[in-house]
Image 1 (cartoon, rainbow, N blue to C red):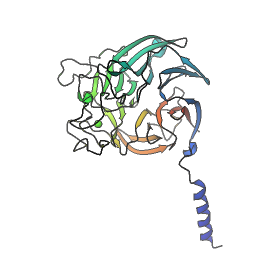
Image 2 (image 1 turned 135 degrees about the horizontal axis):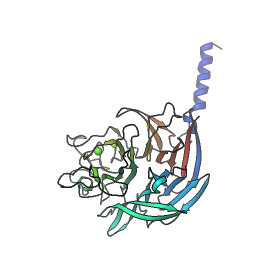
Image 3 (image 1 turned 90 degrees about the vertical axis):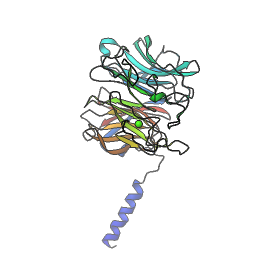
Image 4 (image 1 turned 90 degrees about the horizontal axis):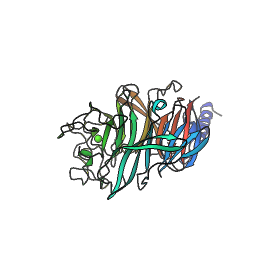
Length: 377
Ligand SMILES: [Ca+2]
């Protein structure tokens, strides 16, 4: 056989052998990592975080809290009543950075209220697998009547301030100047904001005074639609946030003190009936996203990789994609996203991602609810 035909033959064989079916989950897509499923066959695992001991605390959206340690799962009972309709339920879980001194854990959740559902930020301690000293630190005062767009995520900055994102709630998510839901632009409303609090829930005196107000509130930024991702950048101490756009226009934002992020007045996306949200996707008084996805991937939990074991991934941002069912690995240069890589395509709805105290990366995936541990080879 002629040599070049022989090589063509070998090439065709190798292409047909490496072709993947869309249903298969390929864990070996990156040859530098190992994966291990450590929790499986659960409900939707929304929030998860680690105690300094390495014990994992995770919540199921339906309202139950669990401990995972050395392969054993045990329920932590005693949370208040939770409403899990629609996009609500037990949402984020965050362990206080000084947990060893104070034992505090935080969560966000939806609950019943007059005329609909509320969104809440709670703080508690755990004593012998029981929730104790539960306090509500922040709660909405108008109902969510459609059970959508609660956000939310919790994180702490280096100075110990707590940041929590909450979605627009309200009655509808239709965008535009005539929207029936202006919660995100209403600086009297808890909905549609990134809030900044002390760890005990008080208003820090360095918070911004919002337009039309005379004193600072918990509100740090406004104009947010459905911010399901929030993390303090460990390299810069700035707050990075992701939120769902409507049809297109999912956003990565760097949160600036007192800034307006535009929803529902300005968006890169369209309404679901294909009418534009805004004539222009930018406006001089609106802080623009640093990165957008169109079509929408539905970004959820996010984390920066700081551990040295992930040599070429260190400094990257990981973002879970719900609707597009992959884990996004974003290369960062300063305050810019310069390249996106898709990990684990078609693995399922990726709800959350965290770096553990052991430096491994933990990814929560739906259908069935499970947690995958990623380590470097
Ligand atoms: Ca925006």
